[in-house]
Length: 335
Image 1 (cartoon, rainbow, N blue to C red):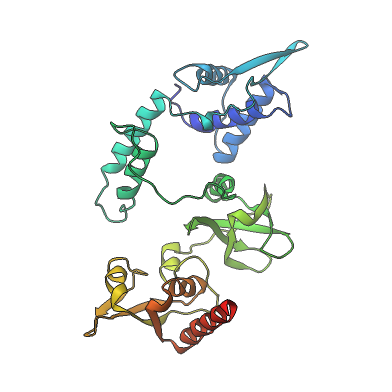
Image 2 (tube, rainbow, N blue to C red):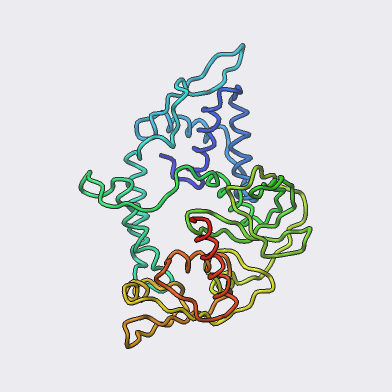
């Protein structure tokens, strides 16, 4: 397997070309597609040459690669390339031995950072990868985790990530829920996942708002724009520290949130804090008094409502009244 830079990106581009039965991809067309993708990923790349492309195709066809059923179909004096099986894709193939070994090595490198500050996520990621890709000594699956296979935003992650890294402006067609779609100039800065959905934050040029939030599953189309990228120095860790989830108003400020949980919920909330700012105190009657420093938002409301009758908002009064009103609406809906 070619171990040179961006090999996986090249294989994925080739896979898309060979899977497209609506167009004939001749050798030069394929080379152009690969180099365009490499340029999008890294504007300073020099691309690949004919020899590298031939090596890539040869590897994909080999058993060490993907055993891809690639055929060259004569068309006059030239030939175009595609899979002879319309259902084949390297993304549907199990890991080959080379990929499995590389993934094992990558996991081993990641595990060197276990226990280090800000690398707590490795404790979760390494076992998940090992289990999901069958890299353990048993074929029996021993883990499961939340995922949404029907989520429509996954294919937007890579182009947006590339635009952030390479500081490119995007022209995005966006369709909010229950509203007409519109096109906007967007300067992307940050990707965040919350509740199995992905969001991108950036500058809405028309409104001059640098923390504009777009849900990836509501994006219809993405095109790169020739506009000049406007950078920012926002500390996104600090921005998200003051909220639960992703939504916040521009007028919002941090408030002291005071909650009381019934005795049956006390240990759960103590061991699974609602937010890093949480301070909890067990009361004499077994209830749990919780203090949070947050900007109130929709996600905070839904988090509180998810505890149903097990929690009561004490402060601020505005949040208490809002939760009470939503509970009354729910009761009215049931009656």
